[in-house]
Image 1: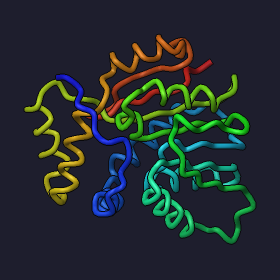
Image 2: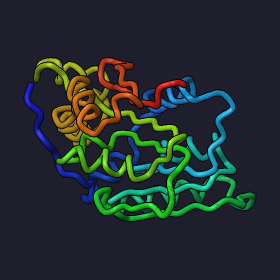
Image 3: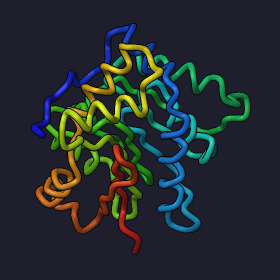
Length: 224
């Protein structure tokens, strides 16, 4: 099935609110477990970049796992970034002695002051019209020992399969969220497409790519 791009940014307040209020607990908890399973032993990052942080559900999970690290949360949507800030403010902020930056910026414009120990991204790549802007941002943000973890949706084989996924995972959600999920599935990249991208940007020797559900794949730094 041919990929159909969707808008790069979520800037409609109703759409943003619907996405922020959606129940992603099962999927996000599962992806975080996959992330934890693939981290190197005794890995304690001092600096973490969350590319496309969205409303901050994954961001808060990262923060709770590494509460002493310095964080950069980046998103091109001001509405999303505001929700991420509010979510982070609900955490134990009085005990923070680390640095947290929120950056409203497009990934193609992002040039970090220094590389990060951990670069994390969830559900961003499928929004990007030119995927090499995404990989370029990744490459600008890492050093030789950085750990990379990326998760995203996987485009189904057909519209029939797409509708089956909507019915299976979003049947009780509002129509606006169903439509957003549908459009995201059609805009998602397939495993073979991601592998081809990695070969072109010469990250294929550094990163593994694998499917983990009927609608998700993960990409992460190969163990040494």
